[in-house]
Structures are given as C-alpha cells and as structure tokens.
Length: 127
Image 1 (cartoon, rainbow, N blue to C red):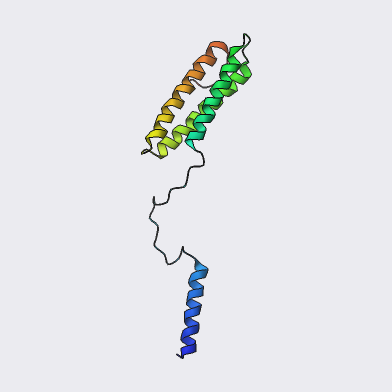
Image 2 (cartoon, rainbow, N blue to C red; image 1 turned 45 degrees about the vertical axis):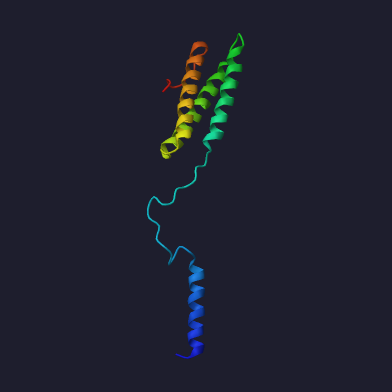
C-alpha cells in the first residue's frame, strides 16, 4: 500500500465516522441513562391550578352560580392535579413536586366539594 493509498484510506475512514455520527462507535447507552425532559413544568401547572381555583371562586360567588363554568373549572383543576402528581411519580426524589402534588390534591378535593354544594356536574367523585 502506497503512502497515497494510506492517506486516502485514512481520510475515507474519518469521513465515514463523521457521516455515521456519534451514535455509532461511541459508548453504548444503558437503559435508564437518558431521561426525557418533562413537557410540563410543575411550578407552572401549580400556578395555573391556583388561577383556576380563583376563577372557580368567582363562578360560585354569585347568587346564581355559573354551574357550567364551575363544572368545567372543577375538571380543569383536577386534571392539573393529575398532571402534577404524574410528574411527582416519575421523579420520586423531587420533594418539592411531591409537596405540589399534595397541595394540588387538596385543591381538587376542595373544588369538587364546593361545586357539589351548588351544582350538579357529571364529574367523577373526588380522589
């Protein structure tokens, strides 16, 4: 093999490695090493749930409660609880998110019981 052939072979090898990218020839990833980032931020979800509780307060404050809005808000409040608690389950080491889950659960139960006092919704029971 001539010097020119060796040089051509070396360049071709480098180009092949570059074309294959880091997924080939690099260290193999073990299952569980890569964790997909959460699509939702529990802090933002918590703030959104608090806003929905405030909207619920307004919907139930009038003498003639706005039951359509109250029922929809109750669903939204409890859906946000499920999302927050789902994140907490996926991150057992995150104490702050677990605390948010507990708070969110209390807001969901409170919303359901307050709505039930004034409105008849087709909503699942709390908890």
